[in-house]
Length: 131
Image 1 (cartoon, rainbow, N blue to C red):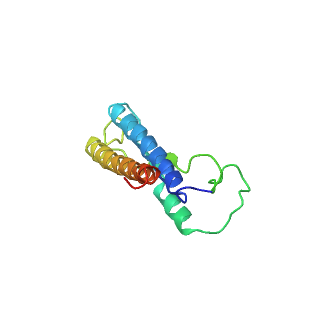
Image 2 (image 1 turned 60 degrees about the vertical axis):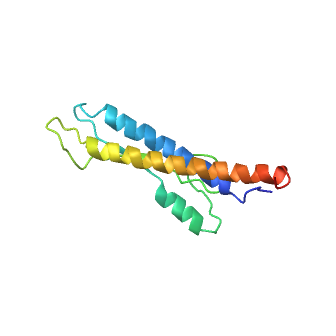
Image 3 (image 1 turned 90 degrees about the vertical axis):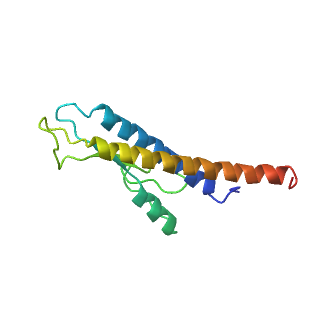
């Protein structure tokens, strides 16, 4: 029996995504002056949206396929942006964009943490008998 109907699992996967995105953005910022470095991004939101709207069971025929409910693994991937070059040295990291994305990701992460705290707060209230 799933105590929260999958909510905690979904929040946990979302936190994994936010952490991976934070690492990727930080890596981009750290390599802002590295010649020929191409910025990277984490792709996940479409996977979560599809998973939430899709109620059918699917079978994985290849280990490279995205895992479905009950299976372990990450539901995101890091992709490089090889299509652009902003600097004369072949680097395409836009520091202003990266700092904006870092701030947005931090807000997203904090929202997830607040939601998880709310779920556990509700459980504590129930365990205390409504007090």
